[in-house]
Image 1 (cartoon, helix red, strand yellow):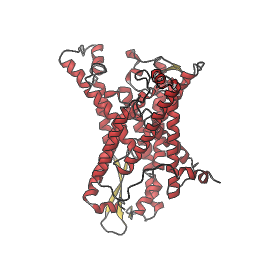
Image 2 (cartoon, rainbow, N blue to C red):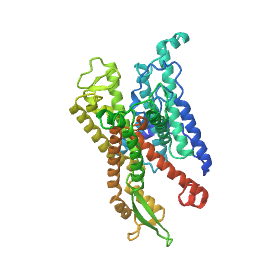
Image 3 (cartoon, one colour):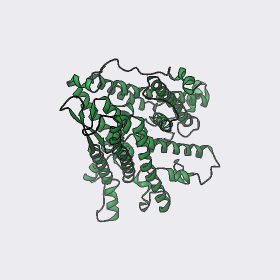
Image 4 (spheres, helix red, strand yellow):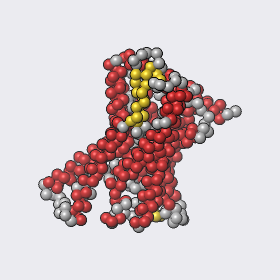
Length: 490
């Protein structure tokens, strides 16, 4: 008996959000999307019952803009389990170890069921150490005494709430993908990053860090002194806090470069085989695999650091070569220090006296981060293209099935595939490496709201694609015949 036959009774019965029976009107899609967004914001502002609020630490803080969610809320784990499950399935699928044909309806059900099962397992494995090892989500002992269940009982209660929140996020993502606009994962990333950027610009809080506009209002009214721009201290205060001009430049630059890169493309001409004069173009964008593979790279880094944090907290005799940790839970030396990505300027600018480690240690750490992001971005971009039906072979079949062909070439899938192989693999690697490089550079220079470079890249790219999808939906709504051409209506 194969593993598919053994697992089918379980995988085929996994809960699933039904697809709409017919075309979903655009306004209804917007309603579903807005509704899920409201639920997301609602869940990120609810603390689990029994949690000692304000006493825990958020290890995923530096990855929050990528993994979404919110520390100390029901969505503590964010989209991390969804991304981790995708990494596992992509690696297994890329190595052809699953033996599933995604073109077969039966195997599609098994694949989707396996993905859900993995997400549920990873959610439990991610939430359990955060709750039961202490330090991340400490239980309120007063609640345990009041309910008579003890500290462990409160921990179990917190774990159950966070686990349910992670599973809810999985189905919220599925609802948006099937009934809304775009994808749930992309929507949650945009929401998380937007909160940070808006706060970074407009926050006037006297308790926390003030936003960019608040700082410059204080500078303009004389409440804050910048110092002379002809001195080292004045330049520092102008570029960094409180002026933050470097962060503003980086944010605007990343926004512009991503929008520009999304518009750079190689257009392959197409013509209809039976309808004379019907022509089109197949665009191969510079960022062909999109920025989404960067989530996989950063999630892998987050999981590595999470393991290091757990080992440090639970293994008193952990060797120094593995890692030494500060009181704030950050690695200061050892393997986990070098594998820890640089998230902000203060972590590498030794000449300002803010970085941890010697200059040569910081240089090694920076080199590893660049290599990890550039090479990892290229590799995961290739996996993404091959597993999402964007590769040369899948694209050739799509062109063939649509009745189109490349002028001057025989109408044959193998011929079209060879033409696509001239562009897609090379552009995929270049685009993935470019995105990885931009993500690291944004982290090195800093951004408004302290958004990570990857988070900013993701938010801009996903918003741009969401804009394109909304424009396409509106076009199809105005011209129903186009839905039949694109296969969007039953």
